[in-house]
Length: 330
Image (cartoon, rainbow, N blue to C red; front, side, top):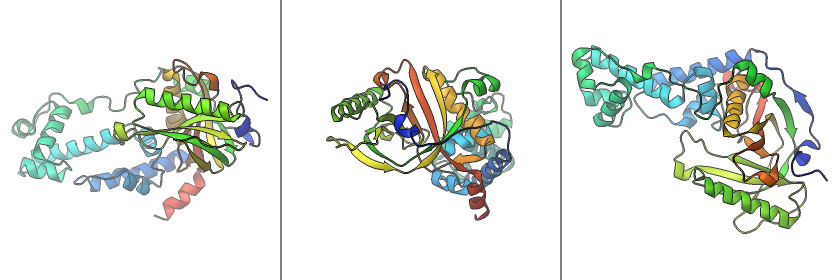
């Protein structure tokens, strides 16, 4: 029997493993074309709220991963980009039209003139009425860096990231999974309590040593309110098991994952995720599947110690040829 500290017995028993080069591929331009479609769509619909599902559909990307891909390709978060377009449109209308502030606010997708005024002052450090009088913006927050590295990220060069986070492809077979779904998962204690419960349950079932302990999120933290954000603490086993009260079971389909092993604190984990999406994915021959990414705990006994992580980060992917076919059908 393999030890709990190391090895993904269940996932790796039947899977071929491929190392993946990180050279630039035509996929990068395909990603850019699809994000360009989203940008064009946003420009045409600034007068109304646009749902995430709409934009993901326009790009033919999974909703699970759309925000990260948009940021990786455009260099801005989706929210920042949309707000910038709205404020830039508003500034043009203030300068070159005689529309009222209320009409401009509604035309640029703001719910009211008060909301518009707050956003304009935050972005340009002046009020809409003052700008209309002077035509000048002396200070502009939105002219600064709009997509800074994640606050948890490490200052590593592209070469250092490529060396530190080699990516490989894993073909993971179908598996039975027990899970506890944690709502309001931004509260760390709730996730840690679920982890502890799953670990104790798995040991009582005699499946802990061979089982695979992992977490996955089914929501996007960029758009889901914190109190509704869900994180699932999961254990996959090739042996039969009975779920306890408060626990559910699902069958995860066979899927291909792009995977990175990472050992370190939360800063290193965040940097690895950033590299996987922003550097590797958009230059690869793959796109994300419509399925959650996984964080597999390699050191299961220490899974509740979040001062240090030993993880396998797994992003579900499929061949880019499939996404190009979908894009042509739009």
